[in-house]
Amino acid sequence: MEILEEIIGAIDKGDTSAVRELSEKALGEDIPAVEILNKALVTGMNVVSEKFKNCEIFIPEVLISAKAMKAGMDIVKPLLANGDVKSPGKIIIGTVKGDLHDIGKNIVAMLLEGAGFEVVNLGTDVSKEDFIEFAKKEKANIIGLSALLTTTMLYMKEVIDSIKEAGLDRNVRVIIGGAPISQSYADEINADGYASDATSAVDLVKNLLKV
Amino acid sequence: MPLLDSIPVQLNLDDFSKEIQSDRKTPTLDFQGLLETAQSLISPKLLYKVGYVNHREKDRIDIEDVTFSSRVLSINLQKIGKVFPYLITIGRALEDRASSFSDLLEQYYLENIGDLALRSIKTYLESHIREKFGIKTLSSMSPGSLEDWPITEQKPLFSLFRSELASTGIRLTEKMLMIPRKSISGILFPTEVTFSSCKLCPRKNCPARKALYDENLMHKYRLNDGK
Image (cartoon, rainbow over all chains, first blue to last red; front, top):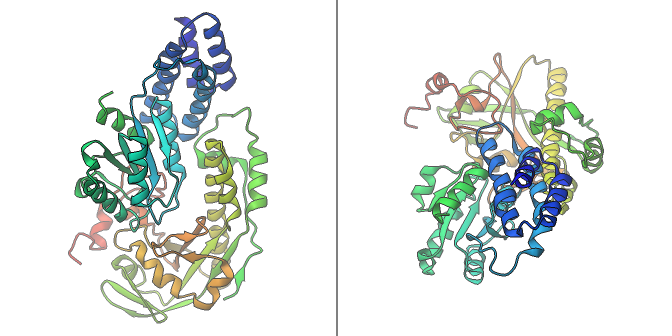
């Protein structure tokens, strides 16, 4: 449908007002809200993510497009009937205890939401107890841990060990990221995955949840 | 050494565009206005001192009565008697304002402006030291930028400032995080050839990289030998 392609194009350009207008127009043409969501809005962000991965664009462009996508979401979401959209998964995300870095983790959260996932962002300086409590309460599929210092990344192992002790590891996967993190560190502490940047994090979550 | 706080912080649109790697115009965002807002929130403070190298070993070096464990630092300061440890902050107001924004893009821009401001203050410090001490070229190393000089070495660096530290408003947490977050620290030292820790860091796709990784340099610093 041409209008859905136009929405994708508008997200790619980061044109918030166009995404808003086109989403309204699409609804006016009786295109189901769920179709606009999946075939235009989420697809549009996928296009943007691919460009970022290929280094054709950088973080500001991704955020501008995400903002445009959200404008479309604000139009269609209220019209989604219960059961129209089953979230492919729920992720708890936070920066570990002792660390206050925020922005990278927030970008990951935004892109995960743009990909259709439900995200609970616990903020910074999050204890293992809080990760576990929220994972249980929210019935999370994935816990995402962020750390920006070699001193705070050590706490990631404590979180993972605690999750295992709590018996949550059967249902909950743990992924990690941040400047000092590497795949070898993820392997060392038995994390289920490592992502080097925000779009890789989305791919990783999709792979782990097989969506 | 006195605390310097009347520091001109140079922020302009060109530097900002380069910093964020984008020239896309966001129609609803007033970049100049954002820069001016940021400028009003920045409270620069700079503390440095003259430190004398007292003792050198293969993997350690003493500056004043404080020992630093780093082979790279020890090699870099082999022929240097006088160094300039420093602490720089722009205060908390900018990061607090960034956190209060619901718009992630504005948060991201403010964070980057903060980093730009810190580099501007460091550039000012370098000019100040070059002029005052008649030094042609300066290089800098910071704890945490290399595996060889880990972030735990912030502790001895901070200990160099002791009584003057309180005047900066900077504190070091147990996990070596500097508060306010928009703070930097390190040691400036005279060099004939500019040194960058990035040349010894093999990390791929680092947004903060300032120089290409040089594997040959690893041999020069004997970082491939056992410590």
